[in-house]
Image (cartoon, helix red, strand yellow):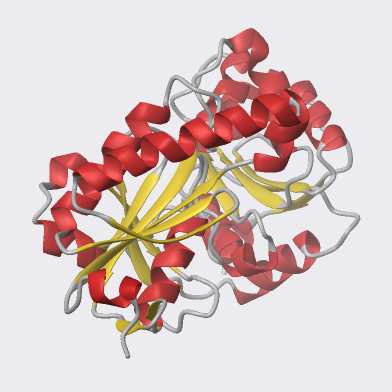
Length: 341
């Protein structure tokens, strides 16, 4: 016999919404048990109100997480957006994942690939961020202007890369996916330079190499080589690889804000950007690709401070200048040799 819950669950094409609180443990320590319990209850009330108003059916709640099902994809997206805005003034902010599919309806909810995919999409986000699959975009007939295309990502236990979109244009840190990266996609296929590629990857894989600089004149292919090196290391670093274009930056004090912006951190005054970065990167393992560093050589001391405070961070820089300000232990690889063959 079908249970009461199963009788009320939508069937056929269903849009699943997964919510989870970012940094719940840190928030508990900061607020204390009593204030956190009050904030948690208020968060539940606001989400249930928004989701229920748009026709959502609550499937499960575990601690600080919700799973809801909606018969209509646009209602699901609208509910997620409304819930996020309702929570914005408070202490708790949720990451939200939305996916549309045809999950198998069981006695106590849904099972199948669509459930796992929606949960993985939600887990990839950050507090205040609403992520959705391309299937939800199509089902909801969402306008491209309402979304930010975050590209294809590999998700744990999901065989194929998944296209993930974000509701709105607000900046967030890179997604927590297997190939966590904002590396630009080159327009051409990488050919040759196997020696330099292997040398650079080998050096960056070593624990004692924190900073690697690719040097050479303009047009030598430093950026293209750096992108190829970084793309091969993405899967080895939980935090992925983050590309920072420094050619528009003319003042050294703007380098740290540029890195913070590439990481998706909130806009920071120049004088506090380094502290913000240190706090964010302290426990991260990732690669920063700093392109065109020759414009801002006097920012090297700040970069050295960053590397000292964040032992899991490595830097791959490109520069036309072979003589840079000291940034600590540094190794260089020059792609110019291929041009001389």
